Length: 248
Image (cartoon, rainbow, N blue to C red; front, side, top):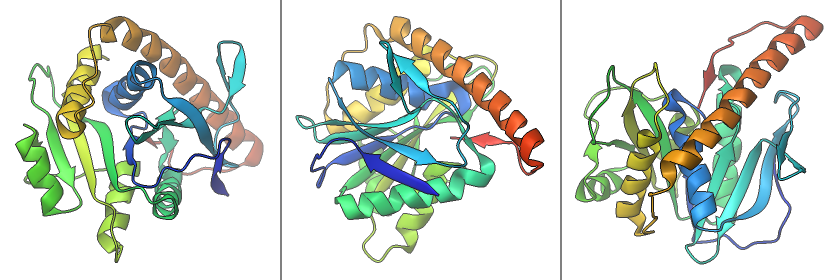
């Protein structure tokens, strides 16, 4: 069973959620980790599941779940920071649980961060998929180009699907940064943060992003490796198979 557990009693009604599970270019984890630091966001909860790989994160000598929620009362935002990619067979369950949590919590808006495959990506453009036309217009006004034709995958796709089916939908925008899949570049996170800035007016200083993003990249890459190893070991022990692809 997948569940979201709160460790602090924080009223997040009316907040904006920023989500970025690990995916192409690790755009989400790099951007969100930096935002958590620069905005002084507080650790308020975590996502747990018996199907998650058996790993734990250590930060400043403290053991912490690898998928955590942070909040900023000042800026009225909540973020999901994940240090491992979600296995394909878990994506729908995690997405549905997150959306149900958002409904119960009174979240007013969701911004997802992801990567868009583009060989030799050099552009400063970012793109958007949204759950409704109003969100697309806001994205366009913020200098983010709406995607006319294409597909989306991962937790963000499930959140948008749930919003479309909801009678009282939460508006969702998925910001996509073109990435070269052969490298992980802090510039991708910078483009995502600047796009979020234009949407929310957070005014985040990105001058130290390159150094800090590299540190996050190393940590996430290590956890992704451990997650994959744990997943393979679990399959051997349990005799299970299935789709091994991992999505953000």
